[in-house]
Image 1 (tube, helix red, strand yellow):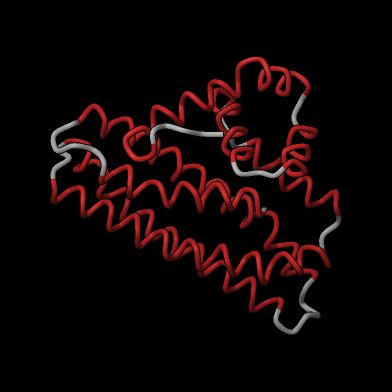
Image 2 (cartoon, one colour; image 1 turned 60 degrees about the horizontal axis):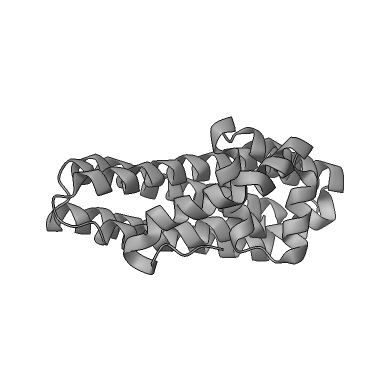
Length: 216
């Protein structure tokens, strides 16, 4: 969970910068950033749907004996709803910006993204501090691994290598080994053959205006 959260922490920080870096009237560049924004929104929605459908029911059932267990689950669900509302505002503002990236539409979208990030970070911090101890106590290793597999199943096949790259970008050696060991053999071979280069090139294209396109 922590590694996945790093992806959303990183991308939610980059998105307002990417939006503000689009020159006025540069609709082609706005389309590139808009596609990345849409993938981010979809990825976060799928991540939270997996939690809603797998983790929360198990914790609600098994953590009832823990005084704060039920309250924590309710808190997570409320935070998901708040994040959904923030994403709805982002999604509402994105089309006008893509059609006409001027000063007004840029600041409206970037501001909405910053408000979204504020809600997201509060949730991620609480989830890591409050939920992970409950998961360690009340879910088996097999159940936790199943949650991870379910998460990967929601990724479109043509985006799997990019998703793997996003996970590995800020992972340490042990975390990298964990994710690669759980990838199918063909996936590991594809990652080493061309997936790493594909991800690095995609990052360079996306981030060039704000950080020179560097990516690990």
